[in-house]
Length: 216
Image 1: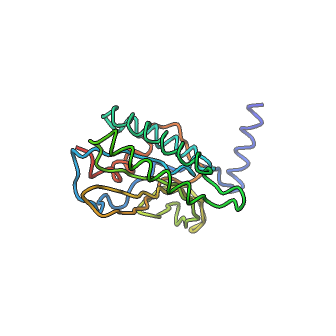
Image 2: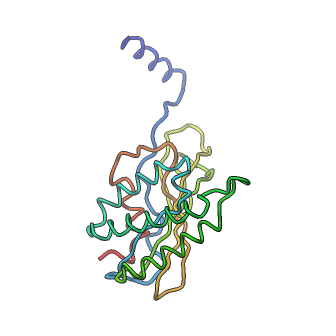
Image 3: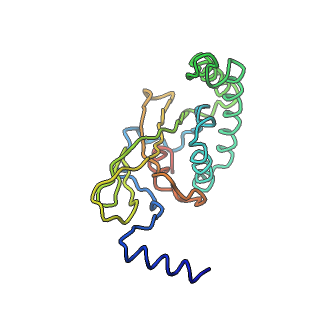
């Protein structure tokens, strides 16, 4: 059997076929963030509920795993988990993530969840000054000479003989809400699909960029 695959591999190479390769580690193009330095401020990271209903949920789990190795404050991570539970439960109690009659996002449920989290954090976590709400988006992006560039991220995708091709990319859509600042929305490229999601520091550079104002 192994001889068969060796012969097949040789045939593919001689025939000029390109074997698929997984995308390399993504890196930010620009590490600056239009947000004032907030080291020492307490921040929690909350996913919008629709990310659990999305085909991109594995990227959410991968980012969470990367966060657990990047953020030293385990109590802060626990606060995020507790607030996330409250957020998700509030949305569920107000009709769920999607409107069953239209299939569209249930805006009323989402707003109810946002209001509950705001009240809960103010009462139970007074030390938390900022909240980052996070969504996942996907889009088609151009890959030129094997490198994709989109939403402030660049990533080597494949070795290819073709100078231009397209791939499906995943991005983080982040909404920064703070007591001492105007809300800021930032979109940061995360990865090209498919991606090896078991690496717990794959997104270290991306997360350091989006959390830059809060890291010591």
